[in-house]
Length: 316
Ligand SMILES: NCc1[nH]cc(CCC(=O)O)c1CC(=O)O
Image 1 (tube, rainbow, N blue to C red):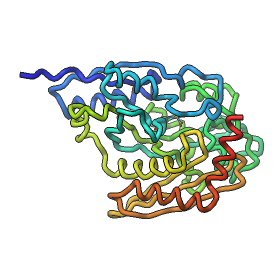
Image 2: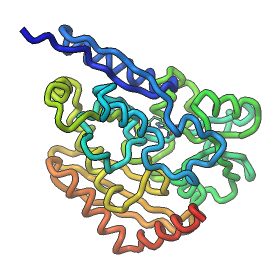
Image 3: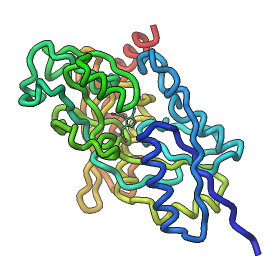
């Protein structure tokens, strides 16, 4: 008889990463009561470098590389990521094995107590809004040029402490992260997709594993969420075609109607002056074609020029 070995799940150590990893561990344990699932934690580069703006360090695998190395060296068997932190091109030998059901992918406004009677639309001129995302910055600057945007780093708790201490008047954060941490009450306003499209993969979890490991891959069937998967594959194909990572002002929104999937996308200039946008509807079964078609559409409208300019500025 062959005894199945323990499955080792690698995770970052942040509170959000651990909540997400423990959720996947519990779901896998429920689906496979005969197997043992252990969690192995590690710090990534993105957790260590906290004094440099994310946009400057670049994003290629900043929050994923150490986890990937541990799978390639067989010190772990799978890794749980916030899908939006997982680059669209994975290292040789690793694949995106599963995408689980998405939380609300929208961004949220979180405000200091003194602004509790305001909304995004009524924030006073000069309000200091913390965000580390060029995507949020560019889109919000377009509609609310009177606000002051300031970079903010650190995990969710650190950011909220900085807000409460008065270093910022408001923050823009993913609603999903706050809710997963049981801090949904800090969501002051969910930002409408007409104002700001969310990041590719936001609110979903991606499980990465070795491409040639059928034993591990077979475990995922019960936890894969089909609609989320199709939406995220369309979003990731769009981003891949534009050669952008998490740290570029690219936003998306997806919706499903029967067997049709609609993907909306935006590429914004950093000053918020130029927004190139479009939408493509296609077959739910071919999400990557939809993503690639939308990327072509936005390129024909000038998206590549915006991106090239940003790469030159940010890396300067
Ligand atoms: N880049 C950091 C990060 N990665 C995932 C989330 C939140 C949860 C998610 O989008 O799945 C966050 C924080 C944020 O953007 O506010």
